[in-house]
Image (cartoon, rainbow, N blue to C red; front, side):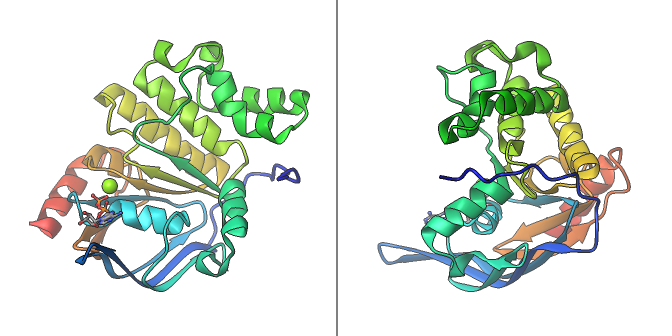
Length: 260
Ligand SMILES: Nc1ncnc2c1ncn2[C@@H]1O[C@H](COP(=O)(O)OP(=O)(O)O)[C@@H](O)[C@H]1O
Ligand SMILES: [Mg+2]
């Protein structure tokens, strides 16, 4: 069992590279039809950095997150996460590494509908048989962090989309991961709820020292990040550096110039 998880203190942003993607190609070959999803992509992400990934549909954004998350294997090239080559690990070691070091957030929240918010956040530790007092304390901490203290007894269908996504973010943080991967986390949310999620992710990176990779289509979302990379046809065609969360217009213009 996966029991020896100990919370670590917050990490400060540093020069340490936690995601190191080198010359990665990913070719999907389904029934003789080949699609090059990533075409020799190189990217370094430093600890505590919030990076937004933009690009048209089909440009390889989700494939990049799946590779960093060890959910799929590169065709060639290397991916080091905290210095570990995920492709060199056994399936079991990779699963354990993903559970301990990565938190993953999806557009659709992926909460279990029959469980309360509290149970959804606690579930991985409940399954592991962690002491209940420790689980209660950890879930309470996370509920404060995502501003959901008052909503923990509700099931997902009684929560707004933004609240459901905050439950999913709390669940992703349970094991105190070093990296959060978020694939269009605000894709189903209105602008006010989206703004709350971007502000929350920004504070999780800057106050908790988490490294965050977030796919987004929205300039306003990307403006909350420290760095923005723009993909086209499986390659990085440019980077943008917002000077603050009010820099959405610069991101929108820069993105259009790069992809136009
Ligand atoms: N499992 C798969 N099998 C075959 N082709 C895939 C698969 N996943 C993605 N692709 C293709 O790879 C390309 C990149 O996809 P994806 O990474 O999902 O792009 P994005 O997230 O930017 O929309 C697309 O052409 C897509 O159709
Ligand atoms: Mg995608």
